[in-house]
Length: 129
Image (cartoon, rainbow, N blue to C red; front, top):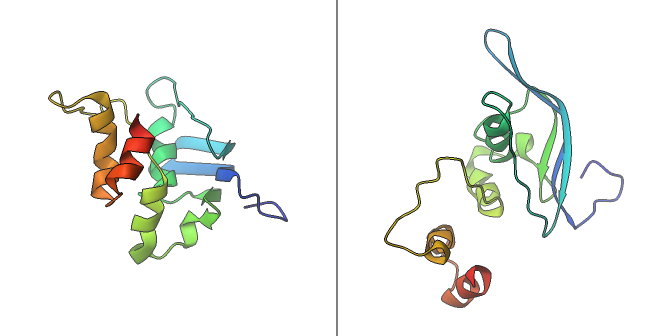
């Protein structure tokens, strides 16, 4: 974490994060956010407010131009390409156009990402019920 003594309960830590898209579109400016273990966060706002950009930075689809982005104590900017899949297993995101499978229940739709990550049926059952 950015603190002197890392806190094991901090799952997401953004400190003064900025992202600019060419030619000069400021998507995020000095954004700071801390999310602790067990917290659920909803990002809302108008189109172009930076919600998707923030999620893309958390999952290392893109890198921040300035600032620090940490997930579970990992500085995502320093993460080697071959390790990005490990990061993405730690972060669950639901985009506004989330494409639920209509033939499955809500719990079954949620379970899909855990099935892909080879979680045990007992683990999935505990998390989705």
